[in-house]
Image (cartoon, rainbow, N blue to C red; front, side, top):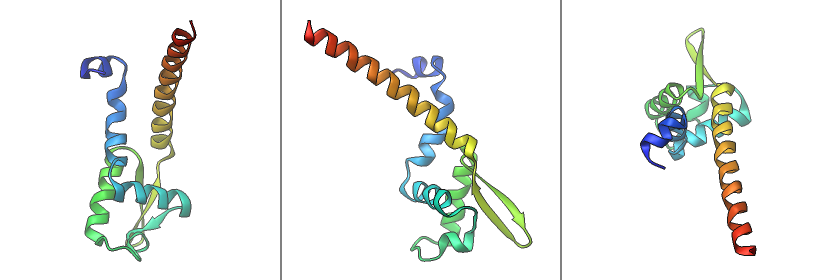
Amino acid sequence: MSRASARAAGLTRAEPIFAALGEETRLALVARLCARGPQSITRLTAGSAVTRQAITKHLHVLAGAGLVHDVRRGRERIWEIDAEGLDDARLWLEKISKRWDEALGRLKKLVEE
């Protein structure tokens, strides 16, 4: 799909989401926040070989894509999933999946004729 047709289809809104999720550490952070709920940087870096500074940078990328946000509690920032961002990603994946299903259905029909 060309960039112009992607833009016309409205897919460019999804680009930051999938770009953010396309990196292994960020995807792991999203999975961890989904599984364990809101967490501080301290908890997110516990048991990880990734530095606190690197985790913070990854969280800011995820926040920029609308996937997470932070809440200040005392001296800490607690990071949590932004469900709306994940819903946007799910909707785009469903849209793409539907297009593939339709294309495969057309191919099947063509082969069976």
